[in-house]
Amino acid sequence: MRAAVLRTMGAPAPYADSRPLAIETVVAQPPGPGEVRVRVRAAGLCHSDLSVIDGSRPRPMPMLLGHEAAGEVVEAGDGVSTLRVGDRVVFSFVPMCGHCAPCACGRPVLCEPGAAANARGTLLGGAMRLHDAGCTPLHHHLGVSGFAEYAVVSEHSAVRVDADLPPKIAALFGCAVMTGVGAVVNTAGVRPGESVAVFGLGGVGLSALLGAAASSAWPLVAVDVVPAKLALARELGASHCIDAREGDVAAQVREATGGGADYSIETAGHAHVLATAYAATRRGGSTISVGLPAPDRMFSVPAVSLVAEERTVKGSYMGSAVPRRDIPRYVALYRAGRLPVDRLLTHTLALDGINAGFDRLASGEAIRQVVLFD
Ligand SMILES: NC(=O)c1ccc[n+]([C@@H]2O[C@H](COP(=O)([O-])OP(=O)(O)OC[C@H]3O[C@@H](n4cnc5c(N)ncnc54)[C@H](O)[C@@H]3O)[C@@H](O)[C@H]2O)c1
Ligand SMILES: [Zn+2]
Ligand SMILES: [Zn+2]
View 1 (cartoon, rainbow, N blue to C red):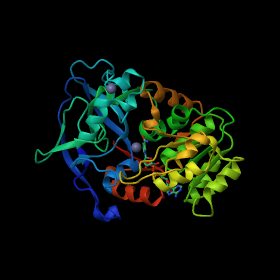
View 2 (spheres, helix red, strand yellow; view 1 turned 60 degrees about the vertical axis):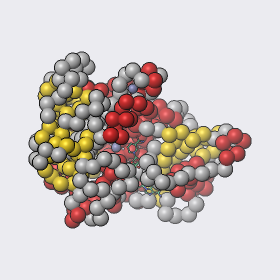
View 3 (spheres, rainbow, N blue to C red; view 1 turned 60 degrees about the horizontal axis):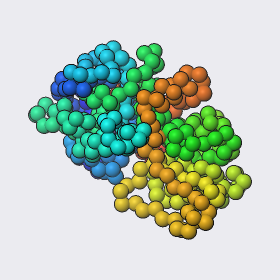
């Protein structure tokens, strides 16, 4: 099959010239016990892929990237009990074992064997099912490796969705939507009339904005450095839009929200933006950290403010999701017109165009771009 393989992190931009992702012929072994083979129909470009390419989120190399994707199950290994051939699925980028302490507590995004497999670049059961033309094994990206014509994954890395959902839309639910909407409805638990400020308006941040709008958050403040993204946020329900390049951003958010946001949602992926997001909350407010800064970035706050002002800082991984519960819910909201996630899709491309696609993501020209496989 054709697939996009990353062999070395840290290539210089522009990627259209340095071509860190090589389009290669890759062999996928048949699915093992508890695994399925999925024909990938669409795969989205997320900043978390870009962070592996630029080396700010290191992963074992070589790796077949991509973690936001959708497709159709074409083969099931022994003992697969939750999926069948023909099912349309969206991938979930943390496999859940169902048995560890976090899984037992209803927090599968924290699955311990799932996190260990993702860090190793293997499937949940420890297998590596991909190799290149020279028989060198390729690591799996977050149990998915969606930038390929087929994916072999644990059945616990995929969620069945409606068969008539267009693949290019379905893919978005696997990362951007599950992460952004989940940060608002699961991690924050926003209620109608509470104020929300979203920092960063990429696929994740605009999904958070849509989730906050669907939750009747008000005021709903959008912050970015790209004017076109601020304009789109306004169309999608933001009450106030703030260009982060101008003036004191935290003060502007406090002004817009009458003293500070009940919830600040950081999705830019920068520790300094997280500090601004914290400063923009009201007394008693919560800051939800969704973006993934490089591992050496630190975040500090006046310690006493947590106590005397009852402030909260909460991390939100994969939207604190229960994927089999949340993805169908968010799809239903999309179908009802309450979560117009199709507005995030700015480009579709062929696999050959993927390096240029990452240039568009890095520059802010694109929001979500989806590779289509036909
Ligand atoms: N927590 C999770 O589970 C999870 C899942 C997916 C992605 N992520 C992370 O979330 C972040 C966002 O991902 P994405 O795909 O939406 O990325 P993106 O690049 O599309 O969006 C980031 C946005 O931040 C904006 N930005 C840059 N500097 C800013 C500033 N100073 N103030 C405000 N906005 C600023 C950019 O213009 C851009 O619109 C990344 O760090 C990604 O790795 C986390
Ligand atoms: Zn992602
Ligand atoms: Zn588990």
